[in-house]
Amino acid sequence: MAHKHTGTIDSEIARAAEMILDASYPIALTGAGMSVDSGIPPFRGPGGLWTKYGEPPMNGFQRFMADPKKAWQERLSSRNDELYQPLMVAQPNPGHHALAELEKLGALRFVITQNIDDLHRQAGQHELAEIHGNWKLIRCLECGVRFAREKIDLSELPPKCPECGGLLKSDTVSFGEPIPADVLRRCAEHSARADLVILAGTSATVYPAVGFAIEIGRRGGAMIEVNLYESELTPICDPSLRGTSAEILPRLSAAISRLRKSRAS
Image (cartoon, rainbow, N blue to C red):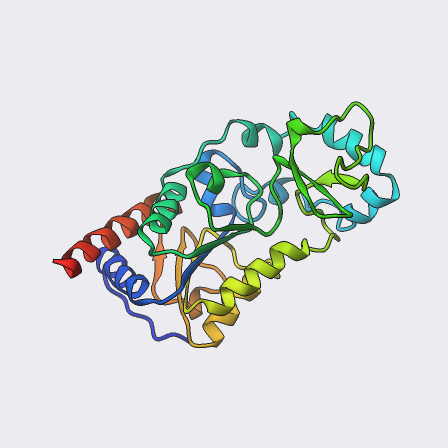
């Protein structure tokens, strides 16, 4: 267990900034809390969709494979529900922009996100793995190629891959569906090189995403948490910066920028 420092939030942000700048390969893992300030409700925890309505069926992928046409019809008819409405209008918040800025500064090498909302991409993050997929994309289950939704003809269901003729599915990973191999491989490659991970807005309960972060900690890498609430990983993170990603990450990015300038002068 990490020995906890208990300084003020400003001093803890300054310490986190030093740790990130001193790291050789810092990465981030982000979760649903990252997007709450963009108007997207989380699944778990206070105000979570699953907290209100219960978890969806755990065999979503098996149901898709059993009747892809029906699954597509259900998907297209649910566009106005409480999950999809916020996704359609959400914009990246200051937390997303702060991580993209850290990438530009060279102070963040890679982001693994559990979010399907496309907001990291919209903020300008390039080195990114969307481990649970992206709601704006459609993926071929045969060849793995992803397409923008508007590029696929949905007049006949289920749609077929224009590249190989395989079965197409939303890129969003369903319950019971394996994480796509190409995404897992990128996560494994980058986390294997990482000596520091920023955990931003994640309840740290969903595998395999959290497993990558825990492995970095096991190897002696630093774990910095940014979260409004305590999580299961809070005891092994140091520092643990209490607050929203939209509030804390811009302050962290600004501290890193200042520190780089002072070190350069």
